Length: 630
Image (tube, rainbow, N blue to C red; front, top):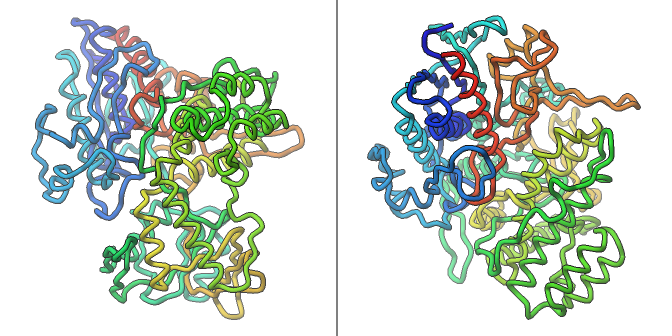
C-alpha cells in the first residue's frame, strides 16, 4: 500500500463533484488531523460539469429546471449522518458570484451576461449550469482539510487492475494511479446503437437516407438533415425539444413576439420540415411558472418506509402503484384545499380522514372527491393525464394540427395560471415517490416483467412527461413553428414503417386513419438506454470483458428475462464482482447506470435528494475505511 491512502474517483461531473463535497464535509470528523489522504479526480472533460454539462455546447440548450430549483448542497431536510454544509442554489450563486469564494471571474462574456440578469424563475442555459458546477467543485476543493490533497487528471480511465486485498491500479491513457479505493462516479452514459435500430440503419444505408438513432442531442451530428427535407421524428420529450432548437434557431432562424401574445418564427431557409409523433402524441407538459399558494405537502404519507409489501418479488402496478397514485393525489389535493379553499366543499381535516381510509381505486374515494371538489375540472384524473389523446380520431391533417395546437395552448395557460397550483402539489408528490423508490427497491425487488414494462417503461415515462418537461417558452416556440409550416404533429401511437418501394420512412397514427407521411430522414429523438455490453465507456467495457462487473438481469418463473443496462452494486454501492461472488471491497460505483437507481446528481433545495444521501453515506464509508489504511 502507499504511504498515504489514495482514493481515485473516475468521473468529475456532478456526481464526482457531489462526492468530493461530502468528503470535504466529513473528513474533519472521520480522518482526524493526523491522517492524510490523497484524492484523484479523473475525467476527460472539464471537471465540475463533466460531459453532459460541459461549457462547450450550444447556448441554445437550456435546463428544464428554474434557477432557484437547482442546488448541489445539503440542507436541514437532508436525512444523513454527515454534517450539513449549506450552499447557494444556482439562482443564489448567480446573483453575486463574487460573494461566494473561491471566486473566479467568468471568462465567457456570454455566460457572465446571463448570470448578471438571471432571475430565480428563469430556466438557465446548460452553460450557466456548467459555470455553477465548476464553482461547486472549486469550493469543495477549497474546503478540504489540510491533510487531504486533491489532484485532477483531465484524462480517460481505461482499465482497473489489482487484487481485492491489494492496491488498485487505475490505468489512464498515459499513467497509472495506485489507489486504496476506487469510485466510479458514473454520469449518464450512452451505448453503441442496439439491435433494435439495425433495421432502420440498414434501410438508410441501402437507400441513401439519413437515420439518427437515440443520442444525447448535444452530441448528435445533425448535418445530414438537409434544408427543406421531410424528417420523421419519433419522440416528443426533452431530446425532441433540443433537436428543434438546434435545427431552427441553431440554423439561423429567429423567434419574435407577436402583437397580442405568442411568437412568430422567421426562417433562415436552412431548416428541415419536421413531422413528429410519439406514443402519447403530445410534448411533455411545460414546467409550472408559479409557486405553491399553500404549505408544502408533508411527504411521504402513503408511499414511504412503512408501506406493507408482500414477501418475494413485487409487481409494480399491483403492489406499488395504488399507494403511489394515492400519494400523488394527496399532494394535489393538499394544495387545492390549502391554496384554493373556495373551490372545495369540505374542511381539509374531514376530507383527509376519508381519503386516508379509502384505497385509491375504490368507489368510496371517488365519491369522496366528487363531494369535496364540486367542479370536475378540479379533480385529479391520472389516466387522462397519462393519455391525453386516447381515442382521438380526426378527419384531416389540418384538423389534427388544430387539435394539437389547442392542446399546447391549453397546457401553456394551465402551467402559467396559479389557479392550477394543485398541479405543483402533484409534482412535489412525484419527486417524493422518486426518492422513496430508491429506498424500497433494494429490499423489495420487482419481477423482471414488471421492472421492464412498468418501472423502467411506463413509470419512468409518466414521471418525465408530467414532472420533467421543458420551460413554457419552448411550447410557444413549437406553436410558432407549427404556424410556420416547419413542424407537423403526427398524433399518438405513432407507427413508422420502412417503405422499400419508395425508399422512405412512412409514418402514421390511428388518430388520422388512412393518412401517411413519407419522410427521407428519421430521427429517434429520445435518450439512449444504456446497455452494458454496448457501452461507449471504455472502462466499463473492459471491466465487463474481464468479468469484474455485471449487468442487472432479472428472470421470472415464466421465463421472461430483462436486462436493465445497470451495473450491479450492493446496498452500500460497492461493485458486485462476479469473479469474487460478491462485492469488491475496494471498488464502488455511483450514479445513473447503477442498481442504486439514484441518477439525479443535483436537486431541488429541501427535497432530501436520494443522491445527496447516497453521496454522504459513501463518503463516510470510504473515509472510515481509508483511515484504517494510513
